[in-house]
Length: 271
Image 1: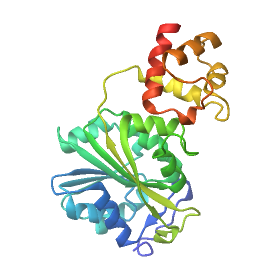
Image 2: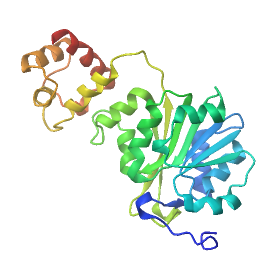
Image 3: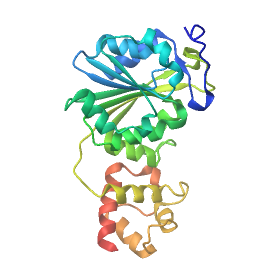
Image 4: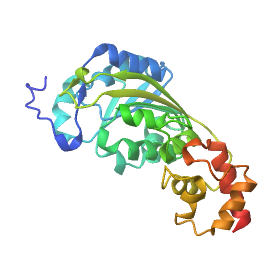
């Protein structure tokens, strides 16, 4: 099919097309797609995953950045409940797009994400304030481990805390490089993120505290925060930690989300 349309892979777009039917079906199983679901797919490639989604979903809107795939899609994705939109997903007004395509109905996201834009895409989806139920994505294995990491693990960091605040993230399964064309140099993994509704708090300050805490991973939480740009004195930081019941000798990687939330609230009372 690629030869027929004279397609050439563009390295800068991180194009690694999924070509294994078993993996495709496993991804859609993990996403729990049913005939009641609307789906947004990011980067459909030749449409392997899109076809499986279309078989199970109510409607699929696929967003493709590579205009060179237009002609090929006329053959592979000429499916009644599939619509392909061409453009950079990061530039799209997601709220407007989903309103036009799905009205006020909920939707799910399923995608084989290019490695180089994984985090910006996931952040955009999470912060968009749209009717999003879940995100099921294939990403680089190391990133999947960071997204789903628990406190105390070497992969746990500020990204893990951010993801844990907004979603219930689960690492589902590893995917070998052999199921892609062309083969990437690393293995991939599939993660499923179910959106969580939380009470409104000052998330901007919360994640400022989280990033400052992980500023120097090997140092204690007290030293990391003292050497950050939080603009609190060491004594004020000590007091906030004390009020939060957090031992100042602990490291950021041992703190749970709830402890970061309590700490961010208590900072407001010591400054």
